[in-house]
Structures are given as C-alpha cells and as structure tokens.
Image (cartoon, rainbow, N blue to C red; front, side, top):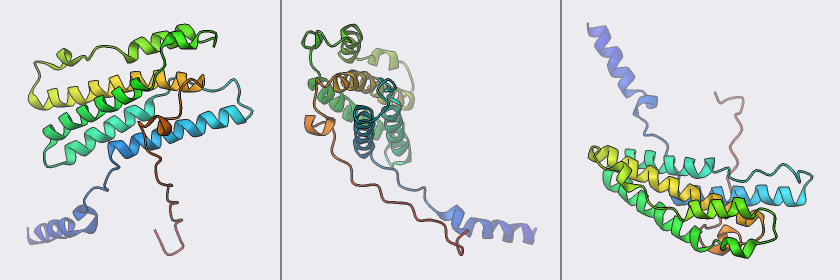
Length: 194
C-alpha cells in the first residue's frame, strides 16, 4: 500500500501532470491569421500557375477559430459569460464582413453572379437563436457561440468570392482583420533534446 501511495504522489508531482495547457491564441488572433492565409492563397493563385485550382468557400479556418474560442472559454474561470461574449464578438465581426460586401447587382458581368447572389443572401440571413432555446444554460451558451460562428462562416464565404472577383479590398484594408505578427519558426530538435 505504501509503495502505491508513493508512486501516485510521484506521478502527481511529475512536470507533465502539473503543467497547465498551452495558452491558445485568441479568437481575434486566429481570425487575423485566417484572413492572412486566404490572402496568401489568393495571391498564389493570381500570380502562379494554378489558375483553375482556387477553391472558394473553404471556411474551415473560420470554424476552427470559433471552436478555438469555445475551448478557450471552457478553460476560463467564467465559461458561460465567455461563450456569450464570444458569440457577440463573432456577430460584431460578421457585421463588419457584411458591411464590406458589395451588392450582387454591382458584380454583373463577372460570371459568378448566381453563386455570389446566393452567398450574399446567406450572409444576410437571420439569426438562428431560437434553435438554441430550451437547452441547459451550458448547452445554450455553447449553441449560441456555434450559431454565431455559422453566421460568420456565411459572411466570410460571400466575402471570399467577392474578394476573388476583386470586388472588395482585403480583410485588413476593409478593417475586419488585423495583419497578424510573423509566425515564429519552431526550434529544431537537437541531438540532446528528446
């Protein structure tokens, strides 16, 4: 019995058990990086040989940022208040993205009018908050944050197509994202590191 108790106390004192999870980037930092990633991909497409391979509507990064925000809230001292604030933050960002969108009528003759008109309509869609009603407070907060992310995804999808059609400025000039700091290179594992 004494050996088992000593072993458990050693495991509990082990550095791998005592470490806090690595801090996550904020939702805003993540979205700034996502806007920069899109701009790099668009620039490669416009200046490179992949003229027919550009993909519009890849909003996995936007969804990732929303999920990252939810995880950060779950780790916080006030998860429910954090989830509500995250939902509101995403709605504010959605409003900024929508404000930068041209109306479908301004894109006549560009070849993508029906697709853009559909994405524009989605971007201006109604909030699905009633879908979250009737849950526990925890699930309702989570649901509202997820629904806010869906609305942001719709707005970003429309913006991506408008950007591809060169009908809107980049996210940084439009003011809904900030240029992220340069990514710090990761240290290479040396011979003396495991």
